[in-house]
Length: 281
Image 1 (spheres, rainbow, N blue to C red):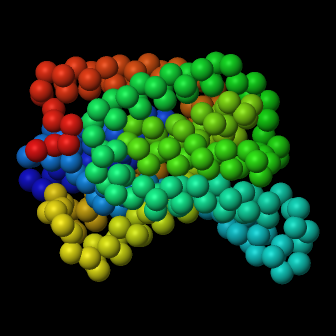
Image 2: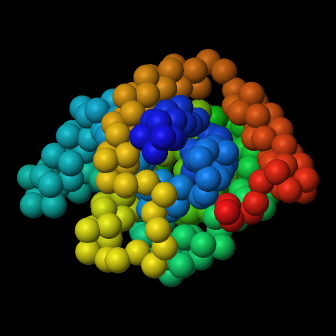
């Protein structure tokens, strides 16, 4: 049963990581309905996100290798430091700083308090509405060529909010981009590139902890189940990212806004009726 539950959660992760609906919220909610109703945990969630991030790396492989190559060449003076790809390298580094700092500062809260389903319900609704407002009123006339270091830092702060399940990593950063005036495609592209160091770093840290620390609480999923869930999330995520990048070039985020608000309200109702426990069993 553990393997089946892991496959289900890997599928959920792959389906929701790139959509602005919060994959961690869905892992948290779906996990509450599986087996004993326990929270799958911050460790399991962070590790299986590696799968979807590998899908991002594969999808943006040419961009990533070009950016890394240009950044390294600019660093040793072989190309101008203001080269667009070299600058993008620095922007990704700058934008990654907030989530690293806040992740370390609020590590205990992220793994405990912030995983309350009450928090998840609130953030689903509030940040869903903010996404809708940004998408409706954003000018959408800027491209990644217009991305400044100030805007990169704002993106990074928005990404850091995704430490709370329900905010959505892609949703938070895309919302920031839309509010700043970037097109939907540009906002999503930088959001996905920016997520690579954060997700791989968080997942790698949790893998390290799994091998070097004795957990104070029993983990719901073992190593094999976690690996299987990660593989499933990669395969499904690759399909979803192709769909999503095509979708946003033509249509608005309003369906996702409505979905977030409805899901948040349903979650409030389930918690209020005692069907779900805020922290699991």
